[in-house]
Image 1 (cartoon, rainbow, N blue to C red):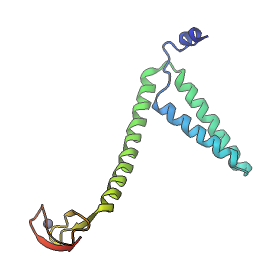
Image 2: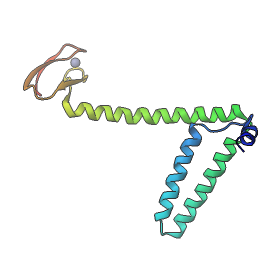
Image 3: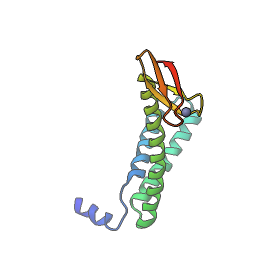
Image 4: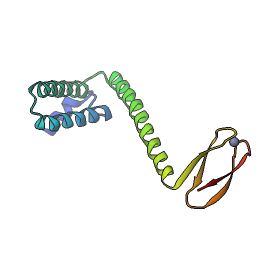
Length: 135
Ligand SMILES: [Zn+2]
C-alpha cells in the first residue's frame, strides 16, 4: 500500500505551506460550520470547504511542479508580510509597556525613554536638541 502510494506520488508535487494553510482554513471552516444554524451560511461554508479540498488535491497530485512551486512562493511572500506586520505591532506594544515614546520638539524624531526614571533630560540623537521629560 505504502509502495503503491509512493509510486503514485512519484513526479507529483505533494504538499507545501500553501496546502497546509488551506488545510487549516478548511478545518476552521468545518468547525465553524458545526455551530452554524443558518442554512445559507452553512451552504456557503460547505461549498468553500469543497472548493478548498479540490484545490488541495489538485495541487498535491499536480505534475506541474514549477507552477505549484511558484504559487507556494507567492503565498510565502504574503505570509511573511502578514507575519512582519503582526511582529512589528507586538514589538511596539512591548516597547510601550516599559518605555515612553517622545517626539523631539525640533525634528519630530521619535525617542524611546525607559519608564520610571523621574525627570530626565532627553537629548535628541538626530538634531541634538535637549528637552526635559517625566519618565
Ligand atoms: Zn531632534
